[in-house]
Image (cartoon, rainbow, N blue to C red; front, top):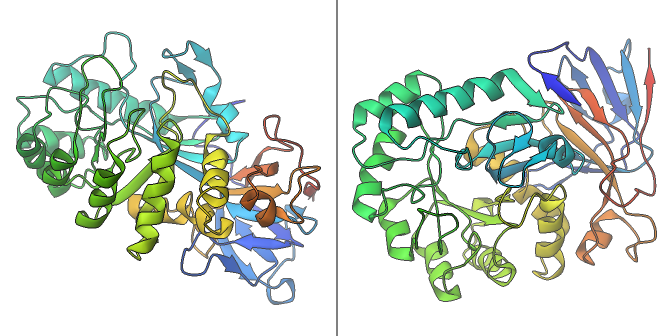
Length: 397
């Protein structure tokens, strides 16, 4: 399903009979509430059903005692145009990922465009075009924040000012272009930050032709807002260097599916030991050489919870509220005023876990029963996850 934006409003939607409400807030990951009220795509009430205004709803969703979680936010993707990736020559990857509970994606650079321009005029034009295109077109309803230029030598402060004024709010991975030295990157990252553009730096070994090793010293000197794929994309820095980055930098610690799984666990545990779990955000780093992972975000949650021995409700915050706060997004948290982007989940059929959280902590991914973006149902039972034990029922009025 391909969806143009903007589109019709959801009207009033009441979501009730919620058995487990995951907030996305790492300081309070589970809410004592069973009802959410949505009006025109925005959350207007969260609480007990008796305390909420549930009258005159356009739709009522009976969650049937299953789980509601903020829609997952993939902090690191590489889109190009529409719902097609030339890296794997695959159509429909974004809509398929929505079936894995992802409602927002953030570009780390449109690097896979065949013939991607590397001159300054061309790279700015590509970034502005990608930002405009995905602002107007949402595959499967997914919010794709794109237009992330790969910085090159010769760019000046005015280039960043022009990009910001044109609506570009992201930099692609620093290090994928000709700017690889820490001091060069630091200057351009500072220019970007001055004009409200958020930056991400490549971390680890080379991933595509033209990229190269970005080691811990370059990452620290560049001081980008997000330490991109701290566990490598694909090849990781040594574990000691990754732990040093967690300790010496105050920036976001991004852990991805297309990286080193051992180092992913080490990075998450290092952040917990440093008492800064709010810095951990998750992504897939797809599409890439290893393909597209529609369930990549859920697999990361299960990996960190089961093998990293981190409570599942906290790991879901890494994939939702942490990213929303670091990326300054109006989603990712179940609270009044936020976008009504939700994934409805239950334990997978025949998992050994007695409930959803226990099943994830045992290493099983949950079954997705429904996905809602801006209060509008985008899919019912997921075609990609294992079947959920129970799924929500929707009644239209």
